[in-house]
Image (tube, rainbow, N blue to C red; front, side, top):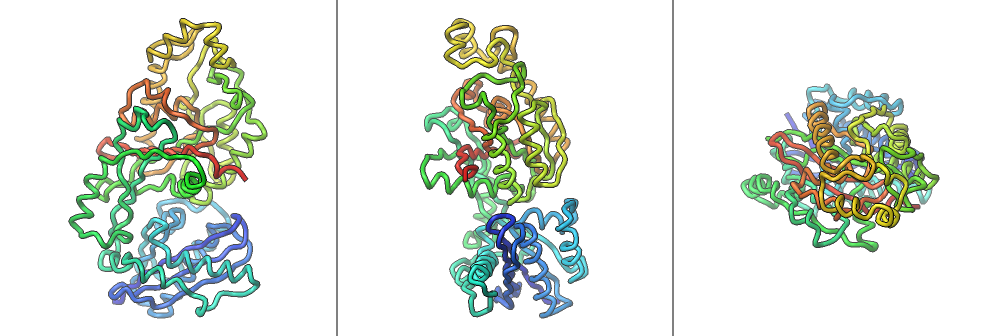
Length: 458
């Protein structure tokens, strides 16, 4: 029986916006390109374009040999998981496309694999060529194709041949926005980026195995500012929540994507705003931030569940994401912010002026409570650890968005890194910023922090 690899991709410049797809059929035995397909499809979403690319690739393979076994490789986790039957298809635009893809070949002849975007350059280039052609008022033709240039430079295709279900898992190197001398960086134990085996075929099998086993001892990277950081953060928003960071024998982790709520009127004033205060709603800026981060998460399509703190600002942020993703929101009380007692609504300077002794004690002792019987950082850590353990057990192998607050997110990160309590004061977390922690079967965790929110602005 012949074996084909189908690589497919789709994109939308606006989501929804002008969209196109690209697909390539590869001979699994030789790595030879057998067929290319690309088309400008008008205004559509990323997910629709990705599904259209999948259908076109499967049809091209079927025209070559309807009896072949086909291994589909895509960088859309949504499409891969839905077509593999592990995720439900809820969106009305996706269901008919998924059914159409499922009818091309019998189900037992097709397998699916998620790959990182950098390993899907051939199909990605075709999709962009199709969108470029559409912008000119034309349709893509085979003479437009330059996608093979990517394949000629990379050995990824041949690295995937002969091991269709394999591939080292992608590991996420952390990005911390904070002080370079941060104690968090010194305590970090995260998995270094391995890439997929398809992207790293130049490594020997033994080297890839060694890299996978040593990945748990990676280091957190410190991200600077400027245009390069902003560009990196856009990429980060697209790959955050990508399961599969662990070696294959570890299985898929429970991945918590940690989203701080958007701004409230108190946020730019840097006032204490916990669970014991006025429970403010999002400001206009905060609502816009929520919409933009929702769009960023929708583009990736990896979030399977959404949980939110019971406070208004987190529920409003979660609702914006849920509407985009077609998911429901579950309220989780353990994700609430720390109760700052009498300090609620005050600035740091006002607290220092009114309660100097209490503040100094609080800054030096995690067991100290804010004035008026608030919640200590130690108590918050106990609550977050219990919530973490409950959710890891409930969502093993799944990707869950936790919409919460500054202190809970910092605490998730601190506990994952094994950092001391004082590290909380050395982290900065912007409104509507994304972070992620993946929890593995061996009890280890890896952390990604994407704190620059420039991708959330117009």
